[in-house]
Image 1 (cartoon, rainbow, N blue to C red):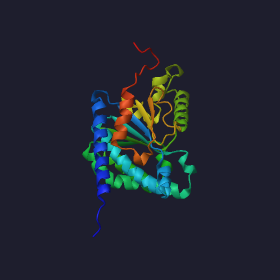
Image 2: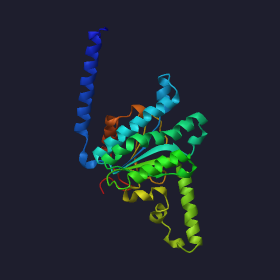
Image 3: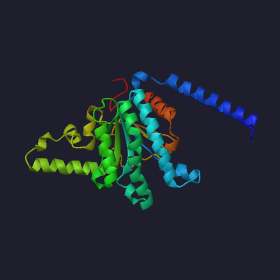
Length: 270
């Protein structure tokens, strides 16, 4: 029978006390009356998280899937209206085929186990991006998840799958040109509001534009994600790799957001 070193036990207890103290401090700072309606997250750093642990990159993606589950429930419980997650970009096809194949399997695994929890928390699944280019099994998993949660009226969990913002804007411009050409839209009626209705985010209604954009792993890039929609979003770049991002990380990012004054191009005192 092995004996646990008492010094190790003391260290573990100290870590637990510190974690609880930090958690309590974060909760005290959080203003529940000013939770952002739409949070968008660039989930970065899965591969680097795995490599730091001498694991294959796919191990990071697997762990990252568990983080998606935790953050989805946490955001829903905080009262977030829309959580948009950048799951697979149009540029991600350039990665090694083995990694792409694994990434294509993740939605199947994710939804097969998580849809009951989504329904339990009244979370509705939506997707933006060209899912017709995804494998049939992935398409089916995504469509089934949307159908199974279509009745939910709580938070919207919006996945960006095979999505790129430049492609989204290009496709919107083509549709507008086609409508003008066919006489369904007058040139004079094209403005920001009408253009926005041609974007993939129009399904999100009044919450189409993120209030807060978070990117994990310390990188400070937008990477072709919702370029039109984040024109006036608050940006928060955090050092944690996505698998290490947790409920307290989310709350801390929201606290940072709450400490800013959103002027939308106007003056502070307006």
